[in-house]
Image (tube, rainbow, N blue to C red; front, side, top):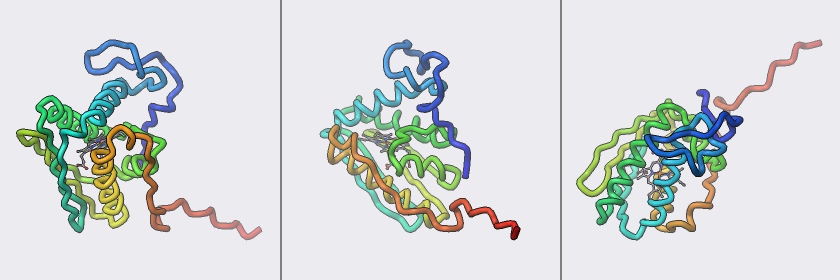
Amino acid sequence: MRFIQDPEHTPGMGMGRGRGQGMMGSGMGHAGDKDHMIDMDTIHALFDNVKSIKRTVRKRPDGFESITESSDQKVASMLQGHVMAMKSRLEKGMLIRRGDPLFRALFENADKITVEVKTTPNGIRVIEMSKDPYVIKLLHLHSEAVSGFVKDGPRGMAKMHPVPPPPKETRPQPKPKTGR
Ligand code: HEM
């Protein structure tokens, strides 16, 4: 299992300053994660604009391919920015939405996920793949979670996404008894 930074639990060393912006707002409590506030702002704006978003997902045996686009150019740019930012978070292990089992599991398995992104004129096309059968299940669930966000809008924000238990061999094994 890879090490995950959990900036949402890092004790305070002041507030993060995100991508050239100021220091006010939800940076508090996310020390060490200077982009958290900006990433959450984009996520809230996406939730607020789901009516202009169209999404298609094609599941593949090794993952999924999605196209997510908006008729509104500002929302299309936000989608592109969000996916690039989340791809970078996955690569760096910068956990976000730690209370949601699905997001936690995705970050725990990020080293087994290949993400390919390509912008389209109105949004973004994403292919996510894995060779690990459990991680492929997580990818399928994630693609459904994002489709749920688009369908539900802001009321979908509070919804948590359970995951199936990981296969036995990846669970920590009990220590062998010493025989005394
Ligand atoms: C609850 C807040 C959200 C969080 C924490 C979040 C986080 C993430 C993360 C970590 C990824 C990369 C992981 C992966 O692709 O497997 C991702 C991908 C993506 N997110 Fe979000 N996201 C949120 C809400 C949204 C919303 C509201 C939208 C659009 C309305 C959206 C659209 C996408 C898209 C299009 C992808 C690319 C993968 C796909 O097409 O399924 N996300 N998000």
